[in-house]
Image (cartoon, rainbow, N blue to C red; front, side, top):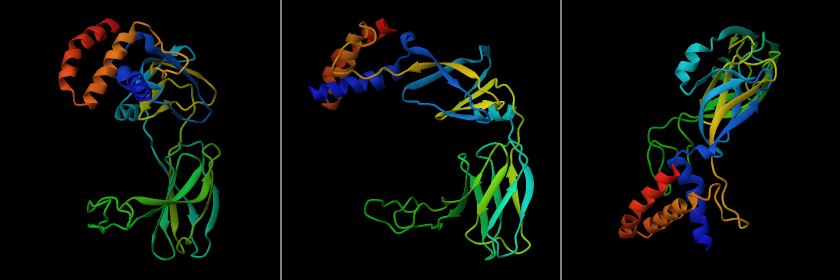
Length: 285
């Protein structure tokens, strides 16, 4: 029984809502903007389909799923500053740049007293991270459970991928930045800092990418945003065995039967159910 229950819930949660889109699972997702915040996470397991139209405070806006198209309309132009002058000894610095500016777009760089490169970026969370690349190797030493040469390896880490170290903070609104380097910037070194400044406004453009919404213009106030989604059915509990619509029961039963038969390699049984399952799918649709 527990095995069949798991198969039913797997089909109901995953196969069913992803294979066919049904009106009964359409809903309106609402979220509220935060002043000076442009990104908002989305639970893509619960809301497995995002559709236009998009509204802000009841007024229809523009919805994008193409990053190229969205950033063509809202380019992230960087501005160059040189806020740090190294002396070869001082490691801690604090300065303020004209804000507000975008999260995930702060880049600080220069040369340290040992001749190495200083590479710092923000993580979008108000933290400044020092980027230190792992050693690049063409053929890392192989291990038994990771035998592919040139790929991620337990002995050497991931070649070319940066290790990060928390060295400071950034306030995206006021522009205040504080950093403390492990090695001081070289004497006379004018470190560069790129930030993408912006003007706040009432948002009317929304990008859905991966598992977050990105909104433009970046708001100064709280706004109510609405967009259509397809919800994922909640799994069955011991207290009920009824789907959202009783009509779905036969389709779910046949789908689970086919899944179990496939696991048992009973292709004749799968073929016998295929025609009836198509009929039930058509009725659900």
